[in-house]
Amino acid sequence: MNKKPKVAIVKGEFPFSTSDIDAMVGRAVGLLGGLTKRIKKGDHVVIKPNLFAPYPPPVSVDRRVIASVVRLARQAGAERVTVIEGVSVGTLMKRVNPSLSAHGMVRGFSTIDVMGMLGVKKAVEEAGGEVVGVEDTKKVVVDIKGGKALHRVNYPKAVLDADYFINIPAMKTHTMTMVTLSIKNLQGLLDEKGRYFSHRDDLDQHMVDISKIRKPDLVILDGLIGMEGMGAGEGGSPVEMGIIMAGDDPVAVDAIASMCMGVDNPLVVGTTRIAAHDGLGIANPFLIEVIGNTVSEVRKKFQLPINFTQPIESIVTGVYPNIDLYIGGACPTCWLMTALMESALAKVPQRFSLIVGVDPKVPPKISTDLEHTFFLGECALSTGGDLREIRNEMQLKGIDRFLGGCPPYEQALVKIEEILIQMGYLKEEDLIKKAQEHKKKFFDYYRLQDSTWEPES
Image (cartoon, rainbow, N blue to C red; front, side, top):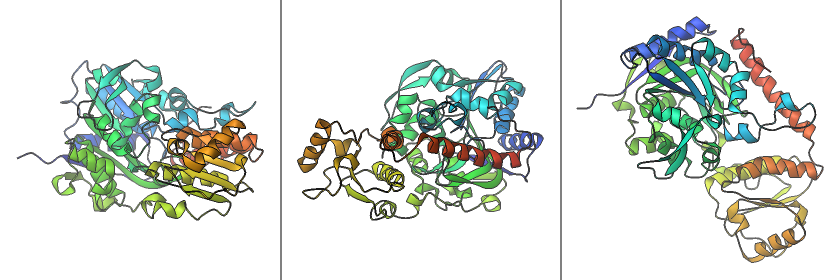
């Protein structure tokens, strides 16, 4: 009979010092037997944290947790410890960089930029490790055995070759996957193209397939400050959990972590359910042994993203008085992209038509002029009939309101802003100010949690 996988939970009290965090991480790993029998002298250990965006916890993993794991690995005998990450697609291409906007709007942050800004690079190097961005490291083409949505990827050679691989996710909600824990955290190992084209309705299976390349040997989850609401970025809010979790089975860790977040049935989380189905671990909480603190001792009810608590159409159709929406057969991702598009257009004192999906039905003449008519996604752009004639007329007149792509991620989030700027409905200064406000919000919050934090500009 197979042994139950163990998941350790260690709870502490706010505020946390570096020594407190070292003790919590050490105890969580110690409950599993420690690292000395897992890491051999001279090993190369690779660590993958969640550094989603240029903001500290709860958006990203606490630098002190990462440094603590680096120290543990070195103490266990590791000769080399590499911390590798690839920030989110939105961070790479969309987020306005207020630090570089003195002479105009600049978008995007590299992974090394984010590591430096958050103090991760300094903390890791002081602990005896090194940092590298996925976009900067050598990658090899890998065929994924058993992959269903993902079959061949460019993957960091350092992770493949590592003697021991540790995954350090954050505890957060996510608008596309409900939660983002250890399974989804491996998304950051793909190259930019692989990350971008994953955000479709097969996203959960895609995430699970990544784990089939190199399954982590150990998961250490940063649950000191979680995130609830419209995560995993600027739209979420902090939840002070005060926990560190650890486990050898990433599926079991995710199952128990989601229960700690108030999700009573962990199988409603797509990545957890599919990973168990594909044989990557145990998701049934009755078959998992929780050690240390119990789920009931640490559990808090996280507010889930609104699209997981009510029908998606309730935030898309019949909501904005200045938007005529024509939506046909559209996948869940395009429904979510539509909600984001509408929230941008709703701020403009003008009427718009938004066309989404396969063969949406439109009247003989839509009520808006062509300048204020948008096509969202590849399905809308490939549709026929009256819409094809509208699209052809727009192209002949040089009116580019086509937000293509599958998914239409960059076009929906970046191109729409550029179009609204061109039309005079939005100013670059507005976007820079918004980015500064987001930065101040998270920086001010985290400074209250860690007075030793000195972010780099």
